[in-house]
Length: 465
Image (cartoon, rainbow, N blue to C red; front, side, top):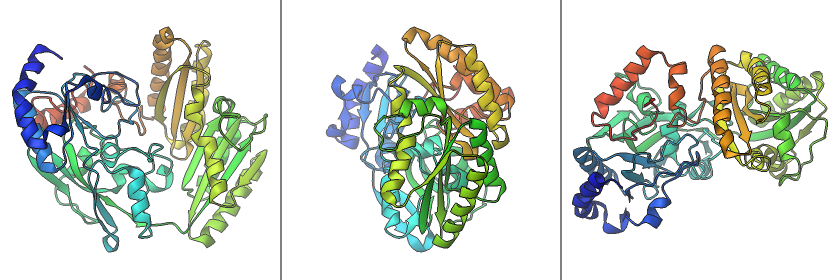
């Protein structure tokens, strides 16, 4: 902790204690260390952790932080992969775990309003009791929070059919850097009055304001889900199959791709399902909707798979078998650590027509970095591929980052984006100029300056320093 920050926080201690209660102001090193990390595995210890319980407390905290120019880092579950909640300039961490109430579910309006600390899966489970469905489904849904999902505009496996988080956010209650409270959007399924401030804040990664209430759009719960697992001898066959499914006007709930390197990692890793040795690519497919339509679509997709010379296709007969098939996909990320101690997980996204091209370019780039390993998997249906560059020794990190930069440059060249769903944070901020031209980047910085003139909200994130 710097002497200047220490002095400021010493002056503020009594005010913070009065504002949110002494038990919600955490100064001990042991407590602060727990908030030093996110999924990017960085370590930056904050000066203090604050646990607000309502909007007015958040407003009061930001008013003080802005006056004393102390950095503020909003935090949900800390599950982000790009450093979005890491307090890289120390200061205050706002822990939203105590603002975790589902405030209302209104089935006739197809809406729900929640506080930012609500866990994504909790909301999905609660609305399902009303036969409703909140589609955004990031891999971290079991523990990630809605506030973090909105801040990062999280994607997930259902993106092909249902879109991403921004497509389900109707309105937001936002506390600005100076402590003022604004409300964007309406709790209606349509609203085109004025600028769309809601979309401005979604995906802003805590750099423009802090969410205290979120109203989401819901859909009717699908009547049935069918799951297929298809094995191929080449990635070209898998990609061609995925393309033909879409070209036949079929829109699966999920369309996932797993390459040979990923398959090798998960062989025998905590899974009941055995994968044949000569498999070099896998498609995992979910089809949902009314039972009659699901049965028809499943039959059509199975025919397309067979026509593309799949070695085998397996269909789940019940919920338990669905879980077994999906374990093939879920096992990848942890299994990668069994072959290398370190990895960089990118989430590039290209137009679907360029999927095979980017996979081939990644393979060519990899040949120039023989000391590294690469595993590709992800949401092939919407062009979002998770490229994992793996390395065994820490001093290989520079080489790994060099390879990543080549992959990102090729992604941009093919009309893609450097981040489909993880966000920028500080991990990818240096790469922003690869995708965003100078004039557009200047506009973004001007918006940041307008809403946060003292630069206290999540400083050091998104924009290159």
